[in-house]
Image (cartoon, rainbow, N blue to C red; front, side):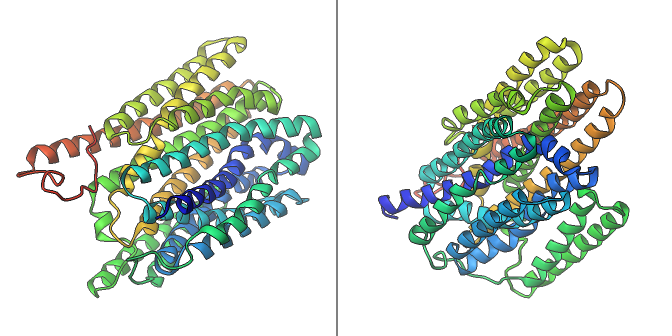
Length: 477
């Protein structure tokens, strides 16, 4: 792809990524103000927090597969337009349930856009160029995470909690307005070269129903046991359908080249644990600082800022990092979360804020060495013609983990904090769940590293590189 146009494609993708990620980073800051202004109950609050991930997850796989088969530009532009419309609806809402519904719309739009971003990087770039594009995407996410809380806190402090949260929820709108026409101008219009196969509509419907049944109880819906049973039945039906579809010679969603590839599966598990742990930790920290320590939103954002700074700095250096590096970084993140829990339990209030800021920097810096390298290593296993689908399945797994983690942590925090003086225990218990997830991610990364070491030791003959053949999976050590 020619250099100038390639740079514009990357810029457009980064613009869309910044738009959706900025929205995500400011939400935690405005939750207390929004709750007070609209008198939103616990159920509405859970829907506002988790509903975005619900529809994001539902849209990912269909959007990824449609992009593979029919082209990415229309889905990219349509998804970003829907996302912007949802932001306007949320900012003008008069009731908590309207905000929750608007967040569902926004999640659907963002879930349509994001597989196209990663799919375009997979389609148009190879090797180091692809790693740099993914690294730039992670860097932009870090910048959004850094600016979002500060922007949200500053707007809330200037405009007041009554109307400030409304302005914050449309802070991403100018970026969407600029990005949409650029996407129409520079993104390739047709189907990606070499992308063929079936839509597998039955598989998409069964996977969507299963995902919905699994996520609904996590968003505050009653009848959790029945929904989980429905999710189990849906999963069984989905797997049976996929086997039948494959035996008929058709292209299923669960491509054997992905689901039987241990490297891809372990990479997805690492991403799930990391994504769930970090998003849930950001939420519980924001609730603790504002509800427990009574810090204003801007001060709470400033305490969380070191995490975004650390993530941004290391994301710029993480391009091409191997599995050994991501494993070490996950170990550092585990240590940082554990230190934050200890500081909340042991230090006086005047010192705990500084300790949390240091812990945030450590975990954020470690995360910069995990996110984009793990994504690049995982997606290097994608078979030809399934770049959007492989990215969508990866992101769907992350969103499922985020929904479970956010719902669990918010439930733990709100239930524990209700007791007198319970905010310290609420923070410690919520962060302990995040610690467990990060430790599990460390285990999966170590297993992937061991798998690659064993494969190299047992593999006879010359390596693919020595034999003159390109190696799709780089050495991890």
